Image (cartoon, rainbow, N blue to C red; front, top):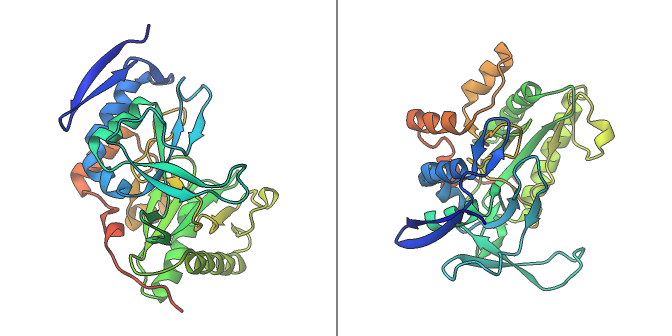
Amino acid sequence: MPQKTELTVEGKRLPVSNLNKVLYPAVGFTKGHLIDYYIKVSPFLLPHLKNRPLTLKRYPEGVEGFFFYEKQCPAHRPTWIKTTKVPRQSKESEQGEINYCVINSLSALVWVANLADIELHTFLHRAPAIDRPTMVGFDLDPGAPADILLCCQVALWLKEHLEQWHLQAFAKTSGFKGLQLYVPINTPVSYDQTKEFAHQLALRLEREHPVHVVSQMNKSLRKGKVFVDWSQNDDHKTTVCVYSLRAMEYPTVSTPVTWEEITDAVKSGSKLAFEPEEVLERIDRHGDLFEPTLHLKQRLPK
C-alpha cells in the first residue's frame, strides 16, 4: 500500500503519499525532496505562477518512467484549487473549453507537487485576460553539436537589438539544454503583435548570423545552430516556468541568470546549469532576478 501522511499548509490538511519514492534515480532525489524544494522556493515562484493557467507535466514513476501532460485540472482536485477556462484550439478533438489549474497559493503548489508534477508549464498571459500576453518570449534551442554556450552568444546578439528600442530583457536557463529570454511588456498588447515582433527579430538574427542562427522550425536545419523559437508567443502554447524543476537525469532548474554570467560563460566556456540547492543559494544572494518581469512596463516598437 502507498505510504500516506498529511501536511498542514496554510491551515489546510493536505494528504501526501510516497514521499520516499525516488524520482531521479541518478541522485536519489525523492518526491519528498521535490515537495521540499517547491515549498522553499515558493515565495519567489508563486508570483510568477499567479493567475497563469498551468499545464501539468507529471512523472508518476520518476524521470526514467512514462510521463504525461495534463491540461484539464484533475477532477479530484480540492475545492479550493482555483481554475480558469481557456478555449480549446480548433485542431483539438473536442470543442469547448479546458479548465486549467491556477496555482496561486503554497497549498496548491504542494498539491500539484504531490501529483509528481515535476515541471510547471505556464502561458504568457494571466487570467482572465487570456488574449493579452504580459511578455515576449524567445526560446533559444541549440541543435547538436551546438550547446548552451552558443545560446549565450545568440542571447547577447538579441540583447543588442532589443536595446536599440530601449527594451530590457531577462534571461533564464531552460533547465534542459538551452536559454530563454523574456521581454516584459505589462502594457496592452496582443499575441499577434508579440508573435510578429519576435518572428521579425528572429529573421533579422538569421540574416546577420546565418552560420549560427536559424529561425525556421524544420529540425533538419538546426544542426550546429541555435533555433530562435519565436512561435512560443501564442495563446495556446506554454513554456516551463522560472524556478521549475526539469525532468532530466539530474534535478536541474530553470534558473534566472544575469547578463554578466552570460557574457562570462561565452568567454570562459563555463556551462550554466543549476540544481535545487544552488538555486536556493542564488536566491539568498541575489533575490529574484526575474522579479522585474512581473511589473516592468515596456512597449513594443511600431
